[in-house]
Length: 391
Image (cartoon, rainbow, N blue to C red; front, side, top):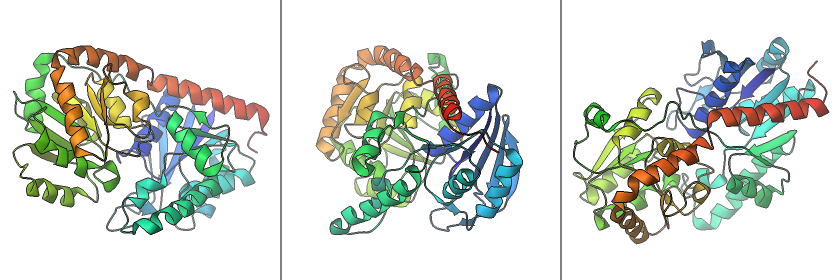
């Protein structure tokens, strides 16, 4: 098949949609499909590159100074030329932003069937904005309308978890959403032998003998890291909390840690390149994910594939991944006291961490990229069988 994937981001950007889009594109290419990925250029300039069998076309964009978000402006004519030149059998968009909107419109005009995967919740954005509580509900309804205006027109909508599919049903009345995981590369993210830890900890500047808890992901308000820091003085479950990632909330979070006098118990690594992430997980003892609005959490899956026990928020899709006792523990992400108690419960069962790690590895295997690729290949064939081919 000739498959065109379109979205807002692609590696080396390391947010969830970028990791998913890149992983799926490369898995499809490795299985013999011709794959073109179309995204806004992260530096504003148009360019084309080949990465692991995938042709990546970056469209000219405006890059917003504060957030680094790239936005294509009037991309339809360029998209139309790309579609005609590539001639996809199927098109797969990842969001409702301008590039995907243009790809959807031009694909439908050319009779190309379109699959849409939603990675967005309005709460992800609302938490970033300085809006009063009274305005949050109306704003979320407007944001949901922008999602609906795109996803009501795709042949099939997919979501990465049951929670994500339920959100589309309850907010948009969107029925028939297929649940297909974002997946995880279980070959890259895997347990390492104990003798590798000293070398890996030295690489990241981490103490050899400390118990290290790790968070990986965006450092923005919707990730709820403030509550995790508030909980840290209340627990001795780990000696060091390592936060890896960047975002708009990073400076404020560092100041918050300083106010709590956590300088000796927290470490902010900032951006960690994608190729270094497997080693970072292997250098940790446990993983913490406090986000309240996770539609799946690829970072949590990567940690589970790496054999780490997990402490996660009892919210969003995280309870679909983490069963207390079997895989780790869950906590109320709004209550620092409950976060601390959950971490203490996990610490009290340290002898069980190896067993939890094996159980988590098995859970991650259920989400392996090969399964995700196979599911989307089947979905693509299904819609091709019932819709006209591209012409």
